[in-house]
Amino acid sequence: PNVSTKSQLPVSLRAGEIVVCDVIRKCPYNPGNGPFLRLNDGWGWVFEKISTTPHVQMQQLRIEEGNWTFEVVNSPAGIAMRRHPMDRQDVMTSTVFKPGDRVKCDRKIKSSGSASFYRVAGNDGWVFDFRDNYTIMMELISS
Image (tube, rainbow, N blue to C red; front, top):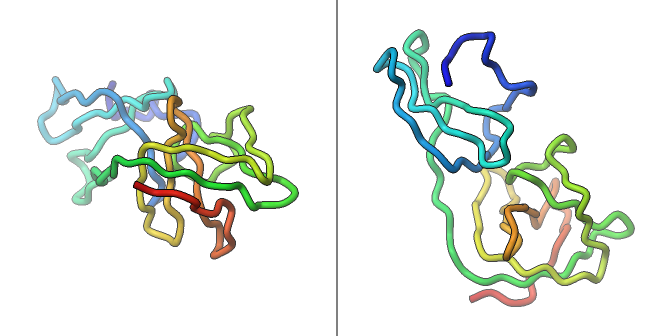
């Protein structure tokens, strides 16, 4: 991984978006760059900071562990699982939960907006509870 423009992801991450990383590496070339964070879905690497800019690009968020069960109430579309905890079409998977489906989750990340993202239990996929203050999934059980 490096910070050159030749190594950019095929997509741009927007301010406030959340990604999940599985490896953290220090920059071997320039201590002002990095650390590098590998996206867990194979999309590529991102970096926390670059020496030529004064601000941090990424920051670590708290992930809450627990057990949540939701009922999908977003009719008629339901909700597609995502590869990352973000509400974007380009990270959707082919798994779609239909209205009335129950979804069990084991991790929670609070976004900067009204939504929280939940990791589907036994999976690396993510779903969310609200979009623009509209309920997508209704919480039934939490512990």
